[in-house]
Length: 462
Image 1 (cartoon, one colour):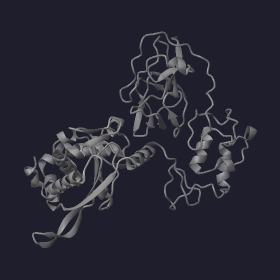
Image 2: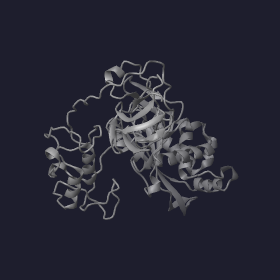
Image 3: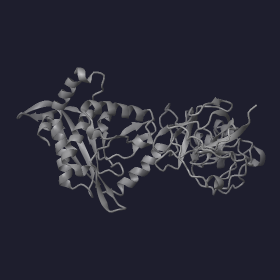
Image 4: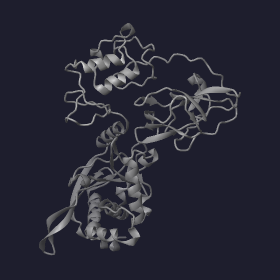
């Protein structure tokens, strides 16, 4: 019988300097046999949902974190029993219980998600060390990142900040909106158990500060649990929404925003769109008003390059891009994301249509890669799909401008010296006034409007 050894897989750096991820779901269970690069978990970073491939071929011996737990990069999340072939652990993995300091002596090779495990280098495998206690962490209020323990394992006795309980019980209490300070523990030494929390909720003992309530009767609970009565629902701020909130605050209070509006008769563009949809060349492609606006933006940028730039504070430079990575704001169940189409300025209308379709579908499925959420140079947000006419969009951090396209509405409009029913859209352009002067912003917006009002105007633009 060949010798085996236990190896731990630590949460890898998923790129973009992210320091933590939430375990959304496990695709394996203890006792399962897995192959190299088999997907073992789905995790959510501050930017996207990604799949974790297995760095080993072997048998799952332990899952160290439960779904819903936020885990710091470098913490062990799963253990494997693998054949002792004399190889060293790949990046992100370490022998069970190995000291962090010892692991830090080796050169770190990030295991990028989607590219599989790093090939193990030669070297003698580290001897399995005894497991030692995790260093104490100063208690903080809010979500707490801790190793998963069973309800019968020892817990911290520091009750100055929170009652005695285990991470699974604290998560249950958070999901139910229960304040643990109000629950009497029946476990050993006053430990609050799962049954204590459930009995507390079931007994109707929710006091004034303790709420898990639905704003609308019959609405879905964010945890998938039925509402237990009341009028509020509390959802932890994490993942994509937490990242977006921080980015928007930073953008709003760093870049001096200015917003301009232009209402345009887009009837000719809508007529062209209808013709293209019946064209054999566009058969099977999804053409929308967003496709036409995106193309108009890309054309207008050629004459107004200042809108495609970035203010670099560290070097005190304005960086103007000679390419366009076009960001498209996408509303997803996990929050707002702005993935971008790389080198969108090089794409034909047909290619742009295909790219937009793929981008939005991937974003709504929560599968956008972190690389696709960075490096944008200018963005579009389509508020028209919600029936909104205009707004003042906030810049995506690091970009000079964002265009909001409103709903296309049939309205009485001046046409050939008469009043006619025309299809009208309002465009809202926000820009960073450090980079873009009012004249430059106005000319860009006017060019976009001119193209949409008369697509043939493209022939006159250099």
